Image (cartoon, rainbow over all chains, first blue to last red; front, top):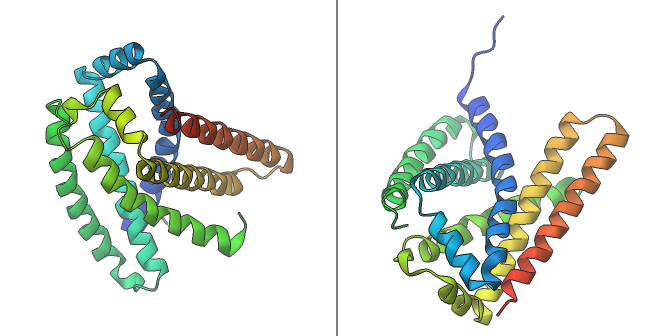
Length: 114
Length: 108
C-alpha cells in the first residue's frame, strides 16, 4: 500500500517547514534592526538590501508568511468547529486568497518599492 | 506551556500575528517605503502607541515561533536528556530575542 499525498498532509508539511524558517528569520530580522542605533551602518545595510537577490529573497519570505498565516487561520477555523469536510475547500480558498495577496505584494517588492 | 493552555495561546498569538502582520506590512512595506530610513523608524518607535504595538507583536511572534519549535521537538526528540537540551536552547534563544527586541524598541 502506498500513501497518497492528501491536501491536508501537504498543508501540514508546508506549515511545519514555513514555521521553522520564519522562526529562524526572527534572528536575522532583529540582527538587522539592532544596527538602528548607528544611522550610517543602518543606511548602509538598507542600501545593501536593495540589491535584486535580497529583493527576491524578501519576496520569498512574503510567500512563506502568507502561506503560514492563511493555513494557520484555516487550522484555527477547523479547531473552532468548522467541519473537517470543508477543509479541502478552505485550503483552496486560502490558496486563491494567498496567491492574490502575494501578487499584490510581490510586484512592488520586486520593483524595489516595497 | 502545557496542554490546553499552550494550544489555546498558540491560536490566540496566531490571530494577533495575523492582524499585526497586516499592519506591519502595510506601514513598513506598502506605504511608500522608499522613504523609510533610520529617522522614520526612530520617529515611529518614539510613539508610545507604536511601542505598545511592537512589544505585543514581538512577544506574540516569539512565543508562537518557539512554542511551535517546542512542539516539533516533543514529536521528534525522545531521549529526556536531548529534550532538556532542546528546551534550554529554545528558552535561551527566545529570551535573547525578546531582550534584543526590547532594546531596539526602547532606543527612542
